[in-house]
Length: 252
Image (cartoon, rainbow, N blue to C red; front, side, top):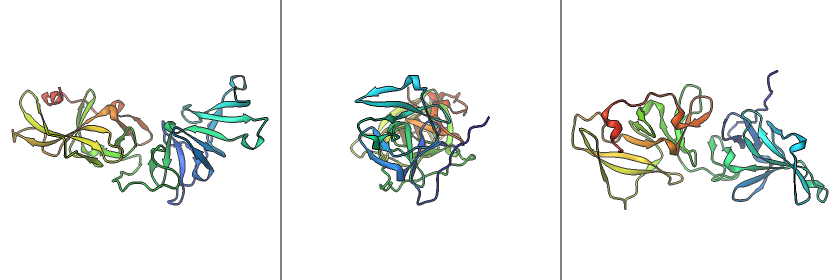
C-alpha cells in the first residue's frame, strides 16, 4: 500500500522544514517552531515522520522519548517526547537535529543559518525542477553550478564553464597548475554564503589552444551536493561521465 505524504504550503509566505537527505519530504511548519540551540530545534508538531518501536523508547530526565524518522527515506531526524510525568505540556513536542533539515523560505536553505524570521542573502539560484540539475555548497546549500555548465569530471574534481555564488580573497596570491601540456594561473574560490573552499578558477593560461579557458572553474565534489531533478545526493555520485584526457591532472 502506498504511503500518503502531507504537503505543506509552498507559497511565498510559507516557511517550513524538509528532510535534508531526500528534500522532497516536508517535516515541520515554520509556525510550529518554538526555539533552538546550536544544533537542534524544538517544534510543537511535525508531519511525515514515524516513531520507533515502543520497545526502543528511552528515558531521559524522567521523560520517555522516541526517535523520529523521515517517512520517505528513514533518516533519523531527532526525537519526540512521548510522556513527561512532571510536565504534561511538553508531551508530543519534537526535537529535530538541524543538520538533518533544510529550511524552506520560498527556496530551500540550511537551517543552521536561517531561522523562520530570517532573510536570506541575495544569491543567485536555480529552479528546483525535474529538468534542471545543479550543484550546491554542501555546508550551506548555496547554489554553485548548473549542469549546463558542466564540462567533465575526474575522481573528486569537476570542471565547469562558469559558476555562481563564489568569491576570491584579495589577500591570497594566485597559484600555477601544470598538466602534461599546459600551464594555468588559478585563484582559490570560496562560497559567498559560508566561505567554504570550493576549488579554483582559471584566471590566466599560457597556451591559447588549451581545452580549458579563462573563467572556467575546477570544483571539489566532496564539498558539493547535487540536485538530480528529484532529490539531493552526493555530488560524486551523479551520473555524468568522467574526464579521460590529460587535463584531469590539473590538480595533481
